Image (cartoon, rainbow over all chains, first blue to last red; front, side, top):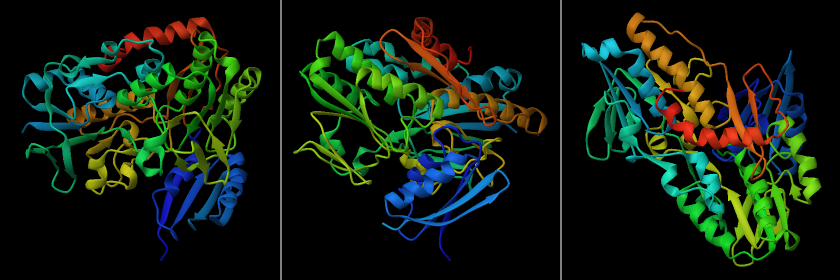
Length: 76
Length: 379
């Protein structure tokens, strides 16, 4: 089963969901995943855009009420 | 039986907690029902925000330090004896001297450290001001700088979210003061798609940068640096030439955290309200070393410390938790050599900084002195 780190960034203003993702990607191995929980609409767009730009993989984005669940896989 | 409170880390978080517990548990201390022990890496307490002024020669180094023993209440047992292994199963902490400290309540307040070595070329090619040695080297480099390209490069994660903007504004004022502004181009890089993690701060900063001709590149996460050719490369496949590179290096938690298998990167899994280490009821975590998605800042450590003081005192006196951390962070922002502002927020209240003023700058300068009252639990 793929190792997955959970970042609960609900209500996180600083440094915010994307910065937390960037920091945690440095700590995991290629093939492992991070799930980010976020209540920030901007991050729900920024995260997949940045993930695509640096050639990792957005596995899924789902919204449950006010919370986005974004799963990213480290590819390099 | 005497309850042993052990605090690993003598920085701001550990110091405030130790002093605060002394104030709340005076009766228990007198009756020898409680002991409070701090183990730290150094006998000197460093006021870290003061490092911002070192590259510009605007602070005396002696004003950055106090003897840690003098900052701690005399009832606290203090050892300069770095922790090497924290074992939450046996409730003990081993140290460099070979001592084993046992505890009933543990506070992990081991802070964060710079890891420029995690980016190829950074140690050789970049300057930073986040530790004293780096700040001195940056001062030397600035003194011999006579114009050219400066890159201010921010990497995630790092403590003191505002410092990269502060150093940029202070560089601007410094270079204007030396008559070098017309010969200098500053480019500021940031990891995400705006100039600061806090959107209101980013929105305030952009026109300030535009007004002064400070360039910027967002979505820039450093991949490597070529110190010979003086080029910095990003994961996003861009590159910048520089004559002087000022970096905010990526940070990790303390080595002892990794060595104790308490968290990847040295960040300890921590409940965001109780500040208990996940899965424990007697291990609290405070300050930079938590894995909570929140600013790594002195004010964060201070407000978290208040919660932990209340909870440990209540657990000892009444066997129950008493307080929750609400996510509060408060940061001064120096917007130049003579103006400043501040920003605060918590888990439910977004940030909204006020306009910069000379009064806030002077308040920040006053806080540089008042910090020592905070550390002693008096402010």
